[in-house]
Image 1 (cartoon, rainbow, N blue to C red):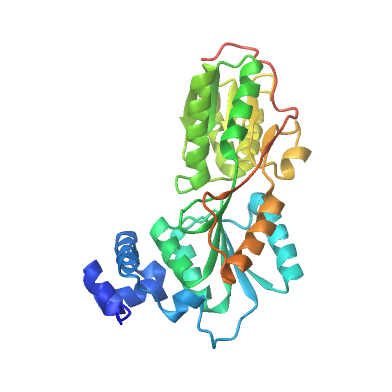
Image 2: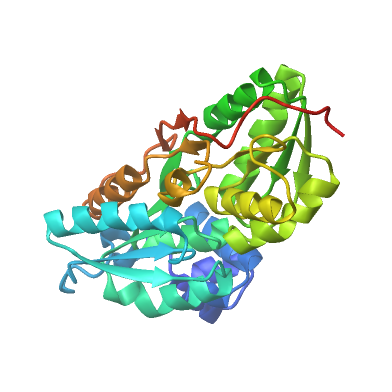
Length: 334
């Protein structure tokens, strides 16, 4: 009968020390993304598994009845609805929800996970900034679900970004805008890349010009600081990575004496609560954030009990919400 491969076999296959393999599984953030990928691929080629990996923890270890929810920025209202949905689902399922805030930092995110790994039964990452290799290693040890991110080997849940972006571009085009200025989000955001690609593809089909301004932190302050650049570029229409940036741009344009939407139309993304109560109301693409948090948490419990990751990822529909921040183009694009 063939013997099971050991940690030493994986080390030889990956060309690293056995201690590095051990550290990669026990403390994923302490090895480089390249080394983590090499170890993971070697383990998969050899069929290396441990009780911890197969059973999502030792069969004799007591369940913690706790789920870790990791968000990039707890001050961002985008995550508020996700947290509410996850919290409601955790309470209904009899689990404690442990919330971690990473300040948009992949390094801090890794440190938090190392400290939290043994304290929870499952992990739900909302917009993780860590590398694919690190997330794969974590998913080998704990039932893991990713929100707003896709990795084939991991259970993922995303908003249907491309149709939302296209609907926003169509809306601006129908209002007579010939050019759209995209105020970008953070480089490490998966959604940022998806939205920018979707805008370029939509603009090509709709015969619109697009420009990109960024990257930016996904905050009101960052949007406010970009308003002078928006004005200098002569933009008549802005599509922002998220509502926070869009609101900041609107506030900044107002301080410069420009009117929204008379001089510049602005569209956001996510439909956070503040977008409805500001003046003028923000036109945006609404994502089902509370449903995403609830479904993500329930899916993590399903993975804990043996469910296999869905492929392709579960995609939640978005809707276009037209308010008062967009209007007819009143001047030619610069």
